[in-house]
Amino acid sequence: MSAASPFVRFDNVSYEPPGSARPIISDLNLEIFRGETLVLLGESGCGKTTTLRLVNRMLSPTTGRVLVEGKPTSAWDAIALRRSMGYVIQEAGLFPHFNVERNVALVPTLEGWTRERVRARVREMLALVGLDPETFGARFPRELSGGQRQRVGVARALAADPPLLLMDEPFGALDPLTRASLQNEFARLRSRLDKTVILVTHDVREALRLATRIALMREGRIALLATPEEFMRAEEPLARAYLETLQLEDKSPRPAADGVG
Image (cartoon, rainbow, N blue to C red; front, side, top):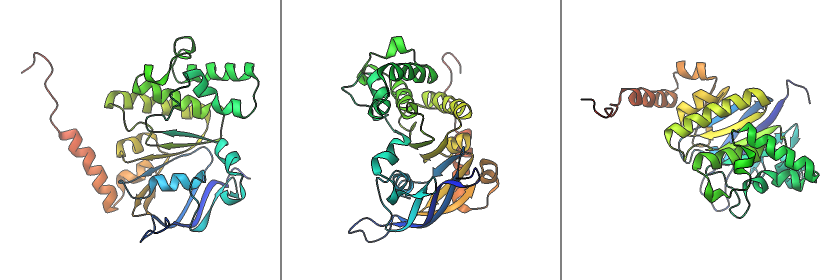
């Protein structure tokens, strides 16, 4: 596979759940290239998460095909395909009965790594996401803050060094300050690790901050595919509507600081 070939490609993909009156995804054509962060942006129900699940074969296209590294997902062994990807979801999706170390070690252990190699990788990944292994390794998810759980989720997704990360609203449940902190941390990690990332969000500010390209979705189709700079200038009505929400946020009154006016 050449460097210029798409890492993930959708060829005329439609997906209609059994018994549904209409497809969730319609005639989707999209190429995602190695090393880029492609953000799927759109309102609830527009098909963002369905698109993501078509990549890791949690769902299969009704028509068309999805290719990963030039190979249709239908030709992959489903387990091998999923282990080749990191997956980060909202609220981290950690196993509550596993401590942090066991959560992060999960995929390397399943891949048959030696105990010493797994332990070294867990420590490396926790340090990478800003969690001290000695402090956090033995803790359980219930003993962590929301932001800490998301950091562990990212560490787990990176542990087996997959070339592709799938991220479904990974920061959506966090408070604004924690969300901004983790977005900045993720941007720093992305530049260091050179991963291909597909990230789902409904937050246009997050899309503009993290994306190399934004695929704006509406009713199962791509309404606009653009870099953040192009998105800011786009005439597409849905893009303009999203940008207007940023202006409204910037104009909204801020609460006065204690002791002031």
